[in-house]
Every structure is written in C-alpha cells, then in structure tokens.
Length: 185
Image (cartoon, rainbow, N blue to C red; front, side, top):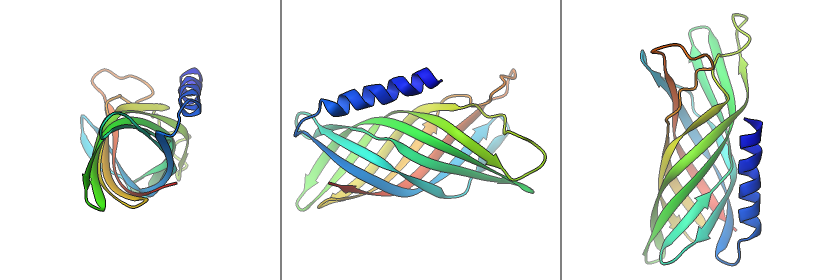
C-alpha cells in the first residue's frame, strides 16, 4: 500500500513539475457525506470536512484534466459508538467546460483512489473498525465557475470491498457526496 501511495504521489509531482502555462492551481474546501453500503443495506454518515489542492490542466478545446489531493474525514455513528476515518483521496478527472457569458458550467468524471491515514473509534468495544486502508472507485462533479470561484457538487462511488478480512458473501463499499467551493489562483 505504501508503494502504491508513494508511486501516485511521485506521478502527481512529476506531472505537476512538467506543466506549463496550460495549468492553473486551486484550492477546494467543502463538506462531504459518506455512505457505507453492503449486503445488509446502507448507513449514512455525518457531514465532514474535505479540503485540498486542485490542478486544472487545459487540453484542446474546452477539455481539461483535474487531479487533486483531498483530505477528508468520514464519520459514522452506530448506537453508542462513533467511527471517524481520515482519508487522502486522489481523484484524476477528465472534464469539459461550457462557457456561457461571464460564467461557465462544467462536468468532469474519472477514477479515484483513497488512502486511509487513520481512524478513531469512540468505544471500548474495539481497537479498530476492521475496514481496509484503500478505497477506489469512480466519481463525477458538476459545477459552475464565476471568475476565480467554482461551486461544485459531486459523487464518488467506491467499487472496492473495504473489509480488511474477506468473508465469503460479505462486501462493504464506501461512497460519498460532496459540495465544495474552489478558488483558482
């Protein structure tokens, strides 16, 4: 897992180092609401903070690539205990921008990989959640851009079974919706 994480960071750093005037940096802050779903249904989490740097790399026409490095907190309450997981999500989305006068609308989609940095459980019942350290899936974002600000709504659907111990027939996926504000430098 550490090799995969370091490889992704290295690829991101190399690609950032080779960009030219076609790229602009930004920062996003927002709220995300996680959901775990599995064979027994789904459980919605609490709204948590999501923040991090974003890069917009222009391609031909109105197309662009949008990699980012987002720190997020995913919290769930179960009866008398609470589970908070701390993630770094690395989405790499392809997008299309639609200019409309002084504003523009955009849509983007692509894969993401999430790395769990840690977790905390507010219970004496367990030392850890039993959930694995990596989540991956597909995401989509829709938004509007006004001057240097972007307001966006998105969804990430986890495709991996995040159970640490694989039990036949048992599967848990981690997904989230989010709303955020970006500022492009």
